Length: 436
Image (cartoon, rainbow, N blue to C red):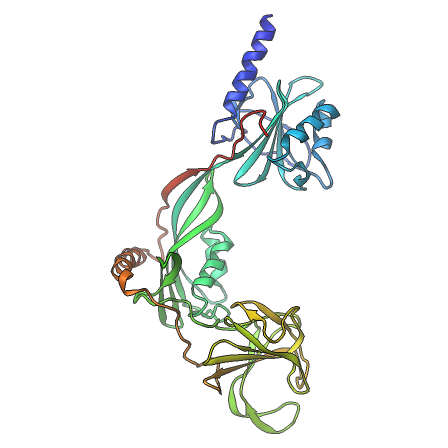
């Protein structure tokens, strides 16, 4: 009777502890995770469970391994596994167990090693409890996410890149993508020069001190080819966007380049010696040398005017952006699926792939630009800005801008500022024990 009472008391403690929102790491070290290993427990709780009387086995899901394969090794029969899978419906699909994902088994410290709980970690933000002690239940728990404000400042030396400097600062590559998106209309990230500099104020999402994502970029500064650009995050008309210090949107009507290119092989000129025709003629476009198959993007929203093959242009697409602007993309290896006259396009949408069709000597894109019905040099055309801050919001924006710019000015290129904890957010996705 005493033993039964002790077991009931222990079971109740386990169930109550499952509701604790923040898991705590309790293993002193991580051993090789490709094979099952017993780890030393240095605290009482693991994922909210008291484990001082049990052993802990931590591993990773192997290729084609199922929850049944894992639990059957810990004295759990098929009936229990079937019941557990049924309880998991609507909480977590057990078919989503994928190779490489971590799991933890809390089991008896005897020869049978009967599993009491299995905890599966599908990502950095959550874990799933499969309870086998007393009542069988499944519980999904989201971890506490801490929002930390970080700053990065760097000058790019010869032979380096923005990506390298961001990674050196310990930030995620996702931050580079955000920075490229913010300054896509001002900075040619394929032509970064030694001496270019940047500063970033951004929010980093962390779990147990480990970065798991990038939140909002509060502000940024970029000194590119001796021109300074500022970006201030501000919500205008209910939508967050980035604006310069005057309140103008950083988003131009067009991308700076229609593809990721190796080099500009030929520029817009009224007189060029044609390598195929062997004579001088006007070249009213910009040639971007790139590998065959490189995706070609429309530089702005618009409607497809033409998408076909021409004797000289090869496979090409022409896009009308508005009453003033149109662009054309020549010598494609193929036109993207679904691209045909009348189709509406979004900026950055893939419309084809680099090739050498038509009158071309090698793989490249000939990019042509029309302004008010006349072909112009795409590299020198003055691109129109998007809508600036409305007059009614300008005063509030200027207040926000002053705070951000002051903070950017205080960031030293040679000194990393300390991180600032902004908030701790716990979004509990927990389901009551035994629930579906």
